[in-house]
Structures are given as structure tokens and as C-alpha cells.
Length: 68
Image 1 (cartoon, rainbow, N blue to C red):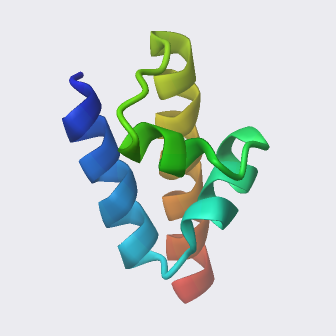
Image 2 (cartoon, one colour):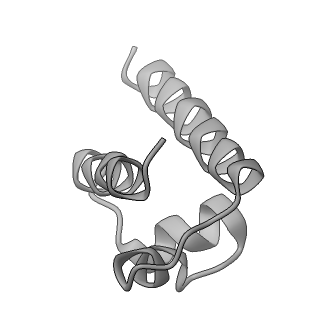
């Protein structure tokens, strides 16, 4: 996955769940500046992408369960 697509997914997630960029980074990786460094053009490892995508899936599942 290209960095731009990955960042777009993150930004969509942040907007959907009304979360700040630093909160997302802290919750996903314990790195509050994660989204900001991606926006600055930094690439991340595939293993990091996998961790972030896993966090997003699990968070979304929990949010759906809370709504029910």
C-alpha cells in the first residue's frame, strides 16, 4: 500500500471516529506524532502499517458493538 493511500485511510478513520491525530497515534502505536510524521512524507515499515490497520479494525468493531 502506498503511503498516500495509507495516510488517507488513517485520516478518514480519524474523521469518522472524531479523534485527534495525536490521540490516534497514541492509541495505535504509543506515538502521538505518528500521523504528523506521515503527513511530512515519512514512510513506515510494513509491520507498522499492519499494526495500525489491525488497531483500526479492532477499534471499529468495538465502536459497532457499543452502538448495538
